[in-house]
Image 1: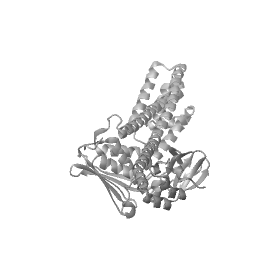
Image 2 (image 1 turned 60 degrees about the vertical axis):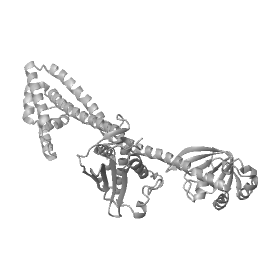
Image 3 (image 1 turned 180 degrees about the vertical axis):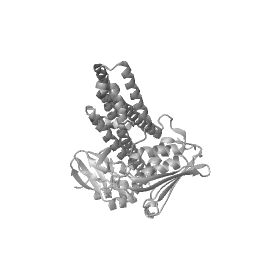
Image 4 (image 1 turned 30 degrees about the horizontal axis):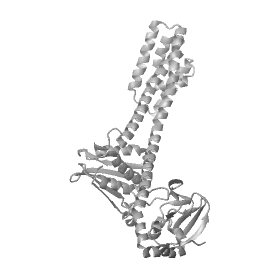
Length: 468
């Protein structure tokens, strides 16, 4: 199907060209009708140039299994011109959003005709910057969201354990309180006198003091002590004695203590033992609740510190604070590995004035990459020292290293060695931009295959004027 030269005039690409000048273009345009949903341009592949003569199309960014729509085009529009002229791959997928009429110009014909018409060439060159900035902005937002998702997943993972422990302790504490309440009724029904009650209270206090000072039993000794105490409780016909022996033994109580309690409690021996065991359990559960809530508070404090939520943009910080906060939030990635983190901090270093949350984004990227490089085992070493008006942070791993051809491009935008869908190629590029452009520092890397990798980060102590 052919096309008339006049049909090309509405396209901004050909603005200013006469019908006569457009005649050679019309001769190389192949026209076809497509249905809605047809992929016109596939992301990551070389492209011809497509002219949307009628209908609409959507521009999409594909990342792994997710697809994000980032733009909409209506006829007359063109696509693929920058990629065709520069011989690069297309950075987006373009899909017909409706039934459409599409013209196609082959790459060779497009390049030949573009070079013959300087106005067309100039118009394409004008597009390079905006297109690159738009795609970089989209991928930058995706990179930040990916980083945020990593932090959120890690925080959820770390919060789940203390939260579950707190829920479990709360349930067990309610059960123990019920036992204590029931014991009071048992004492009344058994006619425990005031004098005998005073003895029982003294024995309870002795048990609580023992629980506070008792050394941890080794497993074998604890098992022997529990067997001995269980036998004595069975002799006394104490109901469900197996539920009582563990907290009693943990408090250092033995058969002799039980005999003293039985002498004072008489018919209420079972209730008295349950009462003491329940109070010991409550004491232990209160400690567990305290530890769990402290852990949750520490994690919330870590994420707050990571984002510098209450301290504004430009902050004066100890560089070690950000490193430690980031390590804490990445702890879930280290927990089930044999990776060691070795710290060689110069604690005498003065504070630096930086964009705190941006600097933590750098630590996140570098540490996450180091963990990924090591896999299951290895050592990450973080060294800080003064270096001529800057804090120098050396972040090393003893992993496989980076090949020379990759190392030369490692800070290039959109360059990544990860599988499709696993990286945007903006992590290290963004890190370098934050350090160099935003803070007036420097970020370099030394690495050799088999010899590990070290990133060197210089951060000036004083803020620079380019900080915004």
